[in-house]
Amino acid sequence: MSGSDVGGTLLLGFLGFLYFLPFFVACVRKCKAFAGIAVVNLFLGWTLVGWVVALAWAACGEVRAPEASQAAELSLSDYDPRLWKVTRTGK
Image (cartoon, rainbow, N blue to C red; front, side):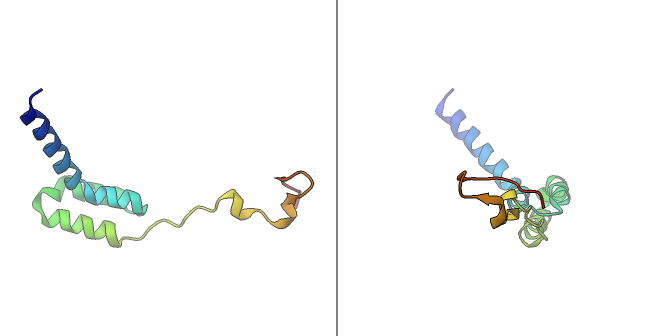
């Protein structure tokens, strides 16, 4: 593989990343409409207007509520200091 092949491959990868940037932003932000953003980006992203719309939608769209972790649900009554670990008590 020559140097120009490597440079061309890197350029193609970078351009692909830029093209799908709105979708990546939607995934990272956990947007509710990430599937719609992906469709707009895939089919209309090449128009630049579609790409800007998808990016704006991804950046400003409504995000999913964070899921409550089990640790947040524990109370002090669930902690047994004699065992130095968390135990679940019947409530």
